[in-house]
Image (cartoon, rainbow, N blue to C red; front, side, top):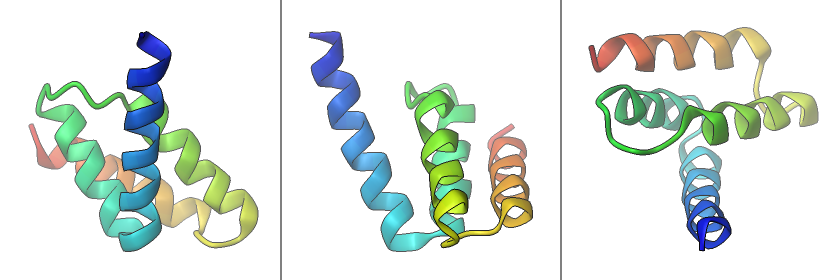
Length: 73
């Protein structure tokens, strides 16, 4: 049951970040910081994978993740 929920969340996160890039990271981290159950443990590793592939920069990913986390507070 838990695996299915996490799989659905991962597909959603992958689609958002894939379509919007850095803005998607900030948006998803803001949602997570607003106490909506969207775990950053799924958001940031996928963003890190895109850094590994060269599609995003490490500093850009870190800045958007931080700004999204601060934005919702």
